[in-house]
Image: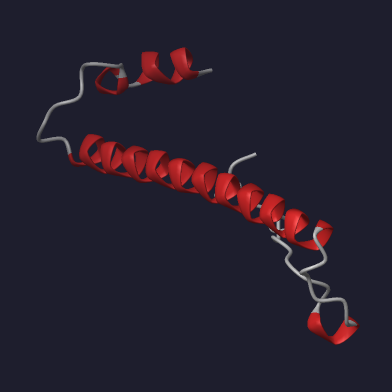
Length: 87
């Protein structure tokens, strides 16, 4: 599909974008932003996993809160989708 769209617009072919082309500039900026968001997302997931592991170790050693009102100790929320609108 990408190739068929590029055939219709020769300027859209990879490597043919002009430095002065505003669409190419916007595309590059958005691509860098998406890459940064993906990096942040991966590192947040890594930190959440580490926090979860530490929470489990604390619970195993009896140092966690056990009252229901306290929330049961440490939890890292992973229920929120983080697809940045991508599927």
